[in-house]
Length: 272
Ligand SMILES: NC(=O)c1ccc[n+]([C@@H]2O[C@H](COP(=O)([O-])OP(=O)(O)OC[C@H]3O[C@@H](n4cnc5c(N)ncnc54)[C@H](OP(=O)(O)O)[C@@H]3O)[C@@H](O)[C@H]2O)c1
View 1 (cartoon, rainbow, N blue to C red):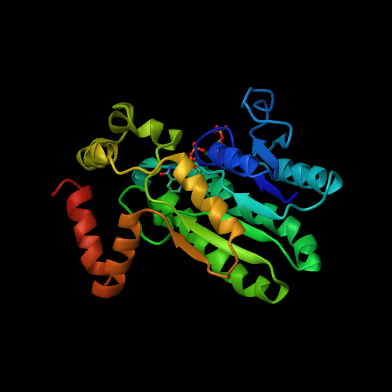
View 2: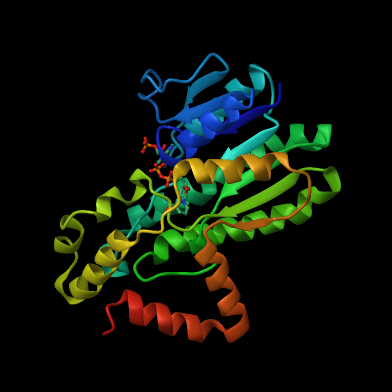
């Protein structure tokens, strides 16, 4: 059976990916944060749950050692776990910025590079990064989060070149809005209240705009894309997921950065 390692599987896209690969008969390693291994996720015997805290290099190394000892590098690695740091830069502390980059970018590279020797030697393997529309565009107050996804896009593109001679494939999946708990913190008024007064009207616009979005994809839709991308042949790198994501990217390419940026600024910042 082919094998896949998926990070961040306690909820959202990661959880749906576990179900999708399991349904197709794959051997799945599903990582959750330490302490959450014993929860009942309803998965079958082909799913092994292992602890992983992306914020800790020691935890990444312990996971890698265990996976290599218990069967070797997976055929497919889905780098999914991620967090969102949101807010004006003045309100976001350096510790949260570092955590953002550690979890969303550096830990993904640390995990990926640990499996590269085995993939390179056997001349096969697929590395999937769950990037974001925010990996190719930036929306107000998501700058720190989107910068971490831009980093992932850069790393991914570089790796695509590096690994191509060895038959190891790299994939960047760029979802728009997917209905998962990642946005839960923006749903209450606390996000607005905790923003310093100068930025509050703008953050209020964005929180309201975000909460009003109805065209969200489901985690199962996202998992279907991940499964297809991981299993279909070909060397394509980027997969914009939401219809409007492809539209925005094309618009930017045709009409230039400033046109899209002015539009986003007008709509997202509340027409101020
Ligand atoms: N939802 C969207 O609209 C959207 C759009 C574009 C890209 N994405 C990306 O999709 C990926 C999955 O997000 P999601 O939307 O499915 O959100 P989610 O349901 O919140 O899932 C995030 C997962 O990452 C895990 N995680 C967070 N910090 C971690 C850490 N330090 N160590 C290990 N695991 C950690 C979470 O575990 P806990 O449950 O323990 O916190 C959870 O399992 C993320 O990379 C996100 O940036 C999402």
